[in-house]
Image 1 (cartoon, rainbow, N blue to C red):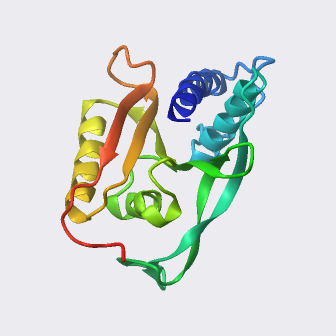
Image 2 (image 1 turned 45 degrees about the vertical axis):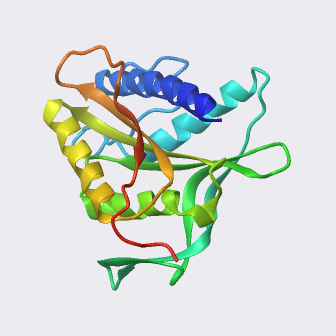
Length: 216
């Protein structure tokens, strides 16, 4: 399943960069079914929603090639979580609170969960990355056969963007004791420095280092 998600992600990147360029230049081709909205000042607005819809569109295209994949959206988690109180972030609590949601879950032919996916936009602070990471890492959400993907999109990037994101991931790894591997992919729509990444600026398997017990 991981190989399938990586291939779908690769196609998603190409499509997003294509429609981002078209939207920015007001050139709307016939195959640009999804486009980015613009704000009142005419600036392109990017969010994780475009990433989610483009990913599902490419997933369906892949399925039509003979590998049917079933998926659910805003899928309830199996565990309960408590990440905030009265709008303020608090120390994460697993097993208390209420069920969360995964942005997307891929299933096999009998409905079993095979891959959990979370999408995020922009180079957010660690407090905004942490809930998605902890939901994905929770072993109660699935055994080691269930793949976990965190797919992150930024509108523009340079070397400092990559450095900043990797520092946040390292900080999270030092903060929690979690043994689950998460496939982390970061997509940039507009790279300010020319390179040959094709829009994927980070593509790493990320594993939290044991520091303290978080899950019961």
